[in-house]
Length: 371
Image: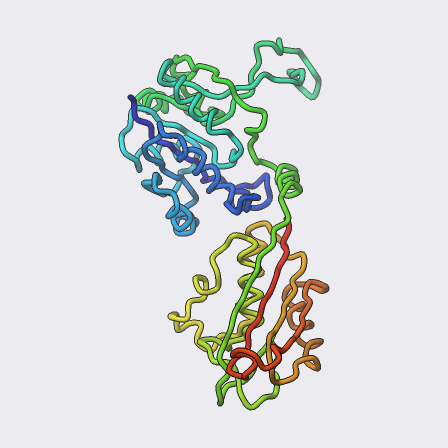
């Protein structure tokens, strides 16, 4: 059986999209890039995968790829698509075939990937194609000049699969080519048009992203935290200092309510919790203001293409009485997260348990996010 190296090309600038489209989180909690990598990884015919990304994103992409065992390398792309593919080939093992996939096409099926690879084994080169539905026109000087026969036209997709040596030899013909197939065509080789899929579209423009975001599911996350009450510490809840003879013990300011809220937001977005993002082993977070950490979480949520719909927080505390401070707490949270996003409640546990005995304070939070 021939061997296959998968190359996921993710080195573009996303100029037409107006934002980094590959970092958008899809409904399953994975980014567009991760979903595309997982698609290629799922195919048993692919042995190894190289992800080609921008130089400034190598560290970030490498961290994402830790969950994908077939990814053998993450490398920086070049000045052109064909430079990037060549760098991907050089970074991976020398397999018989290469399977080149645009990271911005996360919706292809596993059957499509396998089918294209099998046709490439048979013919040396294959690419998924779909018939063109619209009538196509030639234009010149601003006017329509002709109409090609639609029956012979096909729209090409990825992954495109070629014999490795064939592709490397054909790179000499890559000047001003539009895609990898055109490089192979110019070298005189034939490419088999394997069946494509209507759903295998490429995320390219702002309109594509808007359509993608509108199809996202609403997602919900839950957060819980608890801290011990001790002497000689300030009591900070939702960014507000509450007068009391004790405060909460922690590496940061130990704002138990904000910690629960951050974990709820991160959980809804499928992101690591605050213990991973702001570890208590890191001296940078010693005495940290949790409201500043909440700003970082809010920015991370926006980077992933999500926004907070609303959050509901319950603080479990026997003493002190918190109701007089709740309006100020709400104002502080909404100064970071937006007006009307946060609800805060406080309750006791009727002197039961560690919170009821005054040993500590706990907090629950639920957050709803949408795209």
